[in-house]
Length: 112
Length: 111
Image 1 (cartoon, one colour):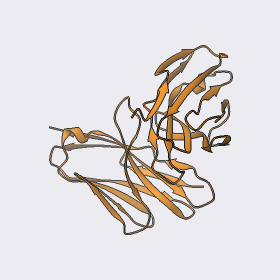
Image 2 (cartoon, rainbow over the protein chains, first blue to last red):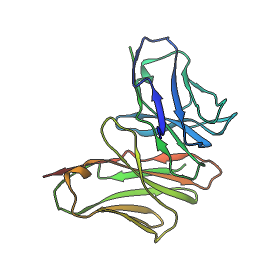
Image 3 (cartoon, chains in turn red, green):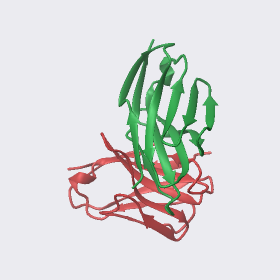
Image 4 (cartoon, chains in turn brown, yellow):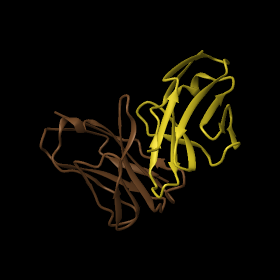
């Protein structure tokens, strides 16, 4: 059982570039979410989804886009990368919003 | 707005020296309080969920408790492998499914 798989593990971008962070889970979880983790800030919710075709904004959604076309996948798109988006990004999933979330091991993103 | 404050920010213990981590929260009706453990370079790993004041849960050397305003993670006779950052998160009943995390407590257990 792979759990939550995030790719890539590391990425360096230049300001203005776009990219997609991939997240896949094989647990048939309906609820998926994206967080960013910055030193001294804790985990902050970017976007979340309660099921295929349904997404909503979290605490810090600006500059990010998501879609949920299947139960398994929940990609996060950076539209035009900015240095302020340098962070560690975590994807998580759970059976429902009130259940404990399972986290991937993160994507470490640096934007120059 | 839901808020979570964890203290202390960092804690150093000797092996076998028991202690507690604190998670204070404000939320408009608590749906659940979650404890996670995070090792360097890894994603958070789920430990416990607490739902109502007075509830307690245990796992090996860890015991989580909950009151109406705070939660404690008690660590009994810790070992070096308990070294990690411990995260607390709350989910309110305000109609949103969002989890709000604290900044974490970094625990170091020296042999």
